[in-house]
Structures are given as structure tokens and as C-alpha cells.
Length: 398
Image (tube, rainbow, N blue to C red; front, side, top):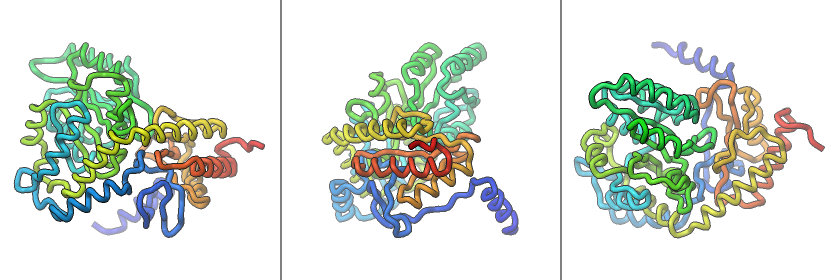
């Protein structure tokens, strides 16, 4: 296989405005970062509560390194099961009001380890078409029949459930798979309706609450709490890399589910366990979420302030329900120009393009953090106004 094939595809990506390159960050993940030695306002991070560089988390990680070293040495079923892993799982189960929890090395490995493990040949999976790629890949890797329903359209979901109900044989099961907060649109799944349909058609709900954990709900427990629902019958997955500020992921549910995953989930069985320092820092992050609700309050104050500013600029907002606030541009090349203009002016909010989002819906995905100041947000709004008017995304104004 020669390099010509790759070069041709690379050129095609560049021609279509779909080529991506990495930006080098040389500072901690705060509200401002250094990108190639340029100080910029970070308006694209999932570090919602600003915990990624918090001294309490760093101290917890350092102490764990001093006691346990930097690596876990093996998979957890070999010799890598450390006390900090079990302590983190207990903390997560308590936080999510679940019987038990199991940690994975990333959100991606959690989803591709969970769904194929549960869904067997003959089972039926229905998934929102805008679910995260890891959920879609987990569904595809399973041997179950897999269909996507139109984004948040409950009539379509019920139609598919009814169709499947008439075809069901034996003990074959039905799963409804959805994000709690959709990572690129920033909107919320209609969980009360999904739960009602699941109860009516004897389906199991698998909820990816990666962007809801620490953010949604009175105590930050996630989208289940936000909607005042009981989550015992929901299999929840989430990450430790967003509001918690660290790395890794988890699945929570009943004891028998977790025991089954320990014995059957390939992405758990066949990988080295998370480093102990990561587990210690994640425990500290969960403690901060519970002990300092003012961080979440600051996040939502910033979200409200920023949304109001964007509406005054007349941006086309896809959603404004969460700290993820995407600005719909549409055309890919125009979106890339917009992102480049923002970066030149000191604001980092990259262009999100196909295949991450559907064709024709390229956008600037902005996110706010609890640690953004009003001065940060005012500067961001000024730059968004100037760049947007310059390239014709918004009106010329006064």
C-alpha cells in the first residue's frame, strides 16, 4: 500500500474544508490557555466547573503517586485492582444513587464495552440519530438489530417500538439508547417521555450522561436528577473527564449488571486499569462537585449571561439549554473562516464539521465554564460580533 492513496484522501479533505490539524496547548486547561505560545480565551472546553487544574485535585493525584506510583501495572482482573479504584466506584454509586458502579478507561471504551456486552443476537436497539459516536459504534458492534430514530422525535421512537413489539419472539430484549445532553447540539433528551415509552414497551434505557454529570440537576447528579426521575431502572454511563475534571468513565446500575460487566465486558477485561493518581483525582473532583455547589451556580450564571449576549448579536443558536451553546453557520468553508478569525482575535472555539455533525449543519461549538469571568465573556462576545459581521454570519449592526 503506497502513500499516494492517503495523500489523495488528504487532499480531498482539504478541498472539502474537512481537513483537521492539532493545536498545541502549552498550559493548564484554564479559562485562558496558551496555543502555540499565543494566549487565547478557551471557549471550547468540557471542563465545565474548572476543576482540571484545581489545587485540591492536583494534591490528591500527587499523594496517590507518592503512595501507589504512576501505573496500575495490569488489568483489574490480573493484579491492577487497587483500593482507589474501588473507592472511586463506591463514590460514583453513591453520587448517582445506584447500587454499584464500574470504571472504564474512557467514555468510548465504556460505551463499546457496555452495549455489545448487553445486546445479543435477536435483541433490538433504538438510538437517537444524534447520539455520540461512541454510542453509535457500541450499537453497531453489538449483534443486535439496530435502528436510529429521528432526533428527539418520540412519535418515531414509539412507531419503531410498536413495530418491534409485533415481531418480538421469546426473551429477546429492547434497548433505548440516548445521550442525556447531546454533545454537539447542547440540547437535552426528553427523558420523561423516553422513560414512559420504555415502561410501556418493556424496554431498557441506556443513558450516556457524560455532559450531564456535575452540570445538570440540583446537586449535579445529572439529567435524571434534572427531570426529577428515579434512575434505578436506567443503565447510566458517564465520564470523569468533563465536569469532574480528570479522565476515565463509569457505568452505574444494579449489582448484577456490574458483576456481569466485570466478567463479560471486553473493554474492561482486556485493558490496563486507570492509573491510581487518576482515580484519586476523580474522587477529589466528585467531592468538590458536592461540597461547592457555588461552582455549578457560577456556571449557570455564565451560561445565561453568554446566551443573552449571543441573542443580542442575532446568532442562530441551535440550543441554549446547557453550557454547550452551538452557533449554527451551515456552510463548512464559512465555518472554518469563522473559527480562524476567532483564533486570530484570541478566542479558541473550533469549527465542528461533518462527519461529526450532519452535512449542512457546520457550527462553532462554544462552551462556558464556571471559571470564566464576565470580562472573559464580554471579550468573547465582542470578538464574536466583530468576526461574525466581518464574514457576514450576522448582520452589520450599527
